[in-house]
Length: 301
Image (cartoon, rainbow, N blue to C red):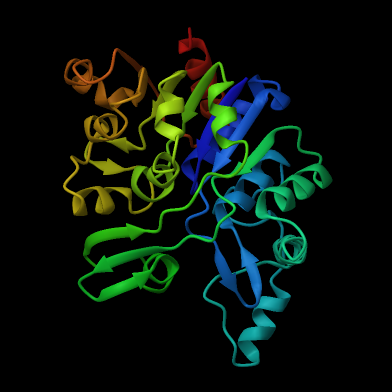
């Protein structure tokens, strides 16, 4: 049994390869929920839905958000009516979000996701990090911004001074999934806003110390492969490198996977973590995703 920590777009790319080489029923995916919120009257859990669509082979893998081949009739009509949306939500994607919103009138988020995953034919277990509503604020030179305002409205351009997020309790099953795993894979998601919120949950770090943990660095050289991870790491005075990523996970990390281009960092990383695995981590096609997934699996004792 393998548990994967996921958020954003980096880890779903890895999941696309991982589910090709591992029986999907042997995968449990714990997903960041820090950015979940209501938009246009519906509950949006973007990171969760990206995992759902990835595991159901529906993901729009051009943007790693939404459903491939989706239409945007409702989104465009809302704009025409003078009610533009911050998020560009497709019609099929919106149906998923409407159902989740309705389900959550009766069930918690975990159960709503379980129902949707079953309906999509997904064999993996997908667990939100928490069933509680959480919040994240990006403190910038423009003031305090909501995460999606920073990311979409302001295109991640403001200077980041700090990141604050609320404390929530882990969803049922999170700690047991970690403890009962043969290994935990921390995917190449933003270490600050996607992975750290999961790590901050009560009991998670203790559970990680009881299993084998391998992390894939989302940083190559001195920049993130995608997204504002490097900007966030800088704001928190964390070295923007695979070394900085390893230092964040140092307390429980057994193995870090870095890109070929970072081979010069191997010796320094060995002072932080016992094992350093070097391979191509730029997942620009399915072949690379499968090779990276296989390399990770092969590195687990």
